[in-house]
Structures are given as structure tokens and as C-alpha cells.
Length: 130
Image 1 (cartoon, rainbow, N blue to C red):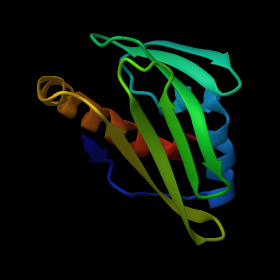
Image 2 (image 1 turned 90 degrees about the horizontal axis):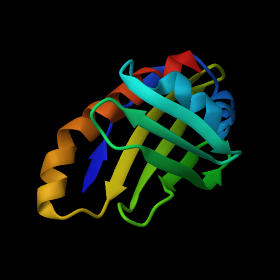
Image 3 (image 1 turned 90 degrees about the vertical axis):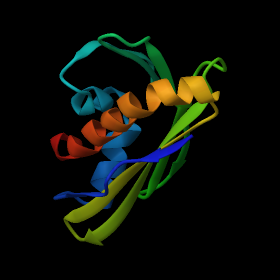
């Protein structure tokens, strides 16, 4: 299952966004209002929970300076990645788009597609808070 957020413009440099997203504690600023839990576990891993959904543990998997970060599920039960692609469009302006890729059975994919899509939109829409 592959989902993507809308591309959002942010009045910050690509390097600033990359540095902010590289620090996992900053993901708390991007979370939806209905967040029930957010906890940094290590320098590259955090766990979060939204009301009515199971807790998800994410770990930084890959960083390409100033233009790409990949977070992945810390558990093999639900394997997926969340990728942030950052494009510089000026000295103090950049665009960010989030991509979700996961291997789920058809039933699970049907159940989570809507909530995950909304979650991606919220994360992208909150990028200006970094």
C-alpha cells in the first residue's frame, strides 16, 4: 500500500527542515491534536499513539542530507516506511511531501488507508511548526 501527502510549501530552508526532522523529538510538533502519547525512546526512535489506534514505534532508517529522511516501523509485525522528501525552492523556502509504504493484507489495508491518509495530511500540514 502506497500513500502520499499533498506537497506543502514551507517558509524555511531545506537544510532547516532536514535538521528539524532529523531530531525525532520534533515530530511531536507535527502530530494531530488527538495524540494520546508521544515519547522519545532514543536519539533515533520514538513511540506515539493516537486515540483509538495502537501505539506505533518509529525508528530513523536513512538520511540523505537536506532532501530525504526515512522512518520505519521498529517492529516487523507491521512493516512500513514513512519518507519525507524535501525540495529547496529558494533560500528560505522549500517543499515537503510525505510518502507511506507498507505491506498489508487487503483487509488491513482497507481499514487503515483512510486514517493513515489523514495522518499524512496532518503531518505535512503542520510542517510550518518546525
